[in-house]
Amino acid sequence: EIVLTQSPGTLSLSPGERATLSCRASQSVSSSYLAWYQQKPGQAPRLLIYGASSRATGIPDRFSGSGSGTDFTLTISRLEPEDFAVYYCQHYGSSPPAYTFGQGTRLEIK
Amino acid sequence: QVTLKESGPVLVKPTETLTLTCTVSGFSLSNARMGVSWIRQSPGKALEWLAHIFANDEKSSSTSLKSRLTISKDTSKSQVVLTMTNMDPVDTAAYYCARTKTTVAGAFDIWGQGTMVTVSS
Image 1 (cartoon, rainbow over the protein chains, first blue to last red):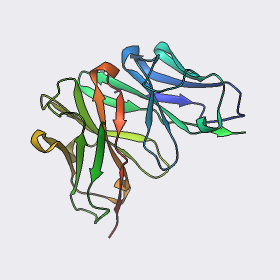
Image 2 (image 1 turned 90 degrees about the vertical axis):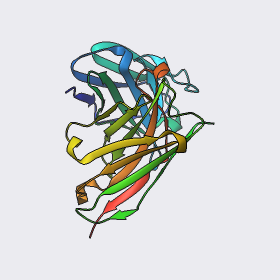
Image 3 (image 1 turned 45 degrees about the vertical axis):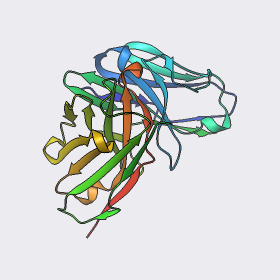
Image 4 (image 1 turned 135 degrees about the vertical axis):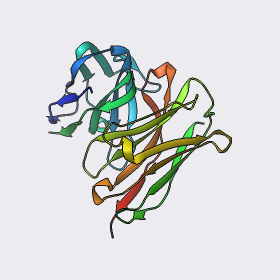
């Protein structure tokens, strides 16, 4: 069973700064099935990135994803006030079908 | 417009069985490119995937909860139902249903608003 470990647990930055969030898989995974979500308090998660690097519909281009194998990164190029939230990575494995989430990274205003 | 909406009890007692319904609109549960999962989130905790059902009725569930979970769908009613047996206070959580689509490769592109379930006597 794949385990996703996100780091850091909490990231404190200021608006305008660049954020780099990490997601490490316990074994090599297909980048085709790695996604990132944003969740704000009291809301459902929102899909940001799928296939490790493809932005979902309506997601601003300041959000980008990269990585392969066991190491994946979500980058927010210039933080806007609305970007402060919790971010989760997620993997889909097909044999057997199973979905795994990381434990999340909280991005807070410094 | 694609939407998913969860419904079910707000409060269940320990040992009882929880039944949750996800009613979808804007797409068909028979669409081969789509599936629906149930995901939960205990207060202040991370997301936890529970179970998934594909258009062809293939099902999959979390290894750790497999013995307690049943997922099914009624395509004519556009509903996906999750049952979880032997509920415990640790199962207190917000329960979400979410859609996957092959074009986003196993990601959950649309989520319901979630329904909070408290397990208490």
